[in-house]
Image (cartoon, rainbow, N blue to C red; front, side):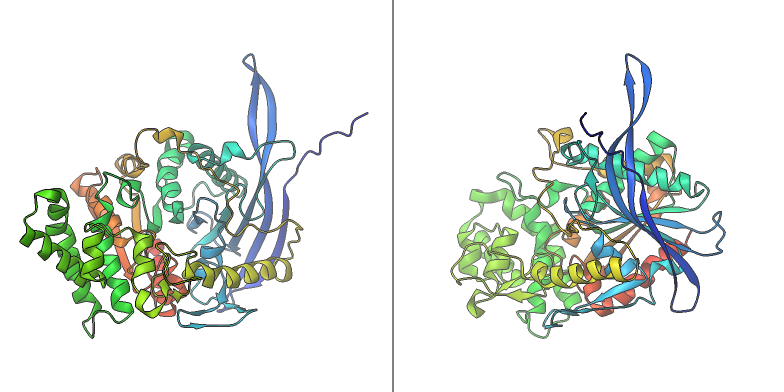
Length: 474
């Protein structure tokens, strides 16, 4: 007789800890079984295990669940675990890795996070399927979750399950997403309302990108070029290419040019006079830190990876995409596009070491699977819902806000973030289809760092205070 297929069960471990001020909290970490309802010819046949989703939850002991907020958090990718937000800014423990130009050597370190969001909100860190320790159930395929809708529905179901099992339907509820996690969070606000009647109090969108048309460099789409220009200017400023000018002055000039004259010059294209083109080339070059010859040769259109490769070519260095403050080296200095992102290379090691140690040594969770910090196993990611159009979930966020006028939105931006530029987020939210009465529900906060702005210590401290203030504003 063939061996019966294993029926998965929740595998959760609970440990007790204390915040730096002495308040006790409980950590619960492990996998939760995700099931789907099965019907045959209209007859309900039960719930079939589909996946095992890894979560880490922190709940303050002896808190009133009716007033204590809870924040569900995840990163993006697609293909990223929640390790970055978990050990970077939100959780009660944080990575010690140094910063751009002053990185610590392996094996790095962990420290108490006195500024953890757990001070004001319970936390549930979610690893989407195929990231972290989350996997499809035995005998099931992971591909259905490697796409916009499958990912959205599975994360939404985990949120519903945790809320229900822990008696938290009456708690104030928040979502915190970073990068593609902001796409997920914005769409979840609408999905949770329409599917479960679960209305949220707030979204924390960190390194936000809701409209891919603002960041995807494609033939015929000139929108990203001006939206990236202020970020290019910030990165050039960091590397000394704007002299001793204050960053605020450089950004103001870049934003003004990006909003008016630059789009006009791009739209005029071959209709520009020689003088007009020369003036545009000179201005873009001065702001971006690139040479006029280079800007002229790329026809005023600076693609972002080409920029990261070109900016410090004279120094035989490249700069980071996730964080332009970081610099690195390529195998040779003549490449058109860098071989790797030096900012990603700087952070993967510290966060991987810290997470793998922390789960086993402090949270008592043991699993022999590799913890997928950032995986390509989710590729190709499916956006079939957006066929023949670019991905844009701004409308879903607006729909959620119109239905729930108490829904507030925090948008956190890093000036040196070359993956999700801050001016692109401003562009998207300026066009968000919500009435004027709801625009006061949206707040922007800015940091002199990159995509994971919390790797910069002054930014981490300010961001922690900003997020706590946002949650306290319930």
